[in-house]
Length: 303
Ligand SMILES: [Zn+2]
Image 1 (cartoon, rainbow, N blue to C red):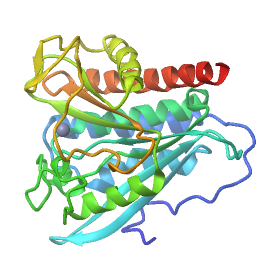
Image 2: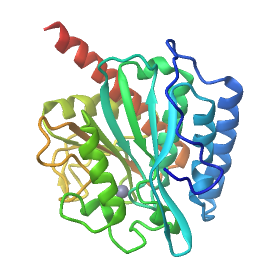
Image 3: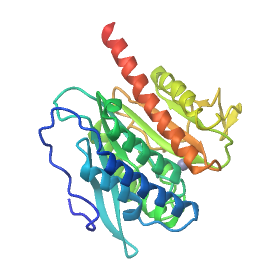
Image 4: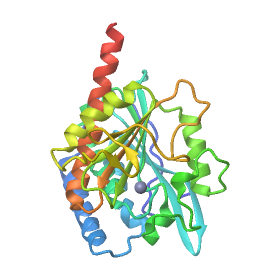
């Protein structure tokens, strides 16, 4: 895999690391500083290049024993280099069964809270790897790099990428993500979005009852940062206590032929809320999903 510039590290080779090692506090502090600068830029609506956006995470990955960085693909478009960044968190290199989740953000290019929330989440995982015990997490923080660069919901070709999945789309990002989702066969898929018409945090639970069991504590945790959207109809869908069970066609999800189907959650922050609160709500919700899934699988194993 070629990398577009010096800011991207080569994918780190697996090394023998029998025990977890949390992120060095100095690295952690420098990642926080870089992320804060980035947030200032986004709040001032300054265009942020992908390399700049990913710099804190790439810096972190270079110093981490648990986090690896690479790209799904690198390509040129309209004189800009684009790539689809991918990160993998795994607490140790021990070979064992792990719960494999895919977590996606930035498929709408004008929703920075999910991207920044994922960066916070990965930093916290690296600072306290125990949170990620039993998991293999594949993280795609910028699924629509052209749209993020332009600050638009749509891709550079003008498509809403989150209506294009499993429909024979010609969009490069969609095809790359579809191939990746088929290859990884995730146990769970989580997408982060922001809604500019919502007064509070809410979510979609797709699939069987497990998705609802995970969404409920995730929304409860997110309430420590942001109020919940309790309207009976959200985004045109019937909702109960911030939970929706239908969704649009063509959204990023598992292929219809995957069996068993993974649980699928979509977390939506209110885009008008302070960015820091949206980020914190995402981080709290994601940690709650991991904790609840561990709880659930331990219970299942004990049956
Ligand atoms: Zn969105």
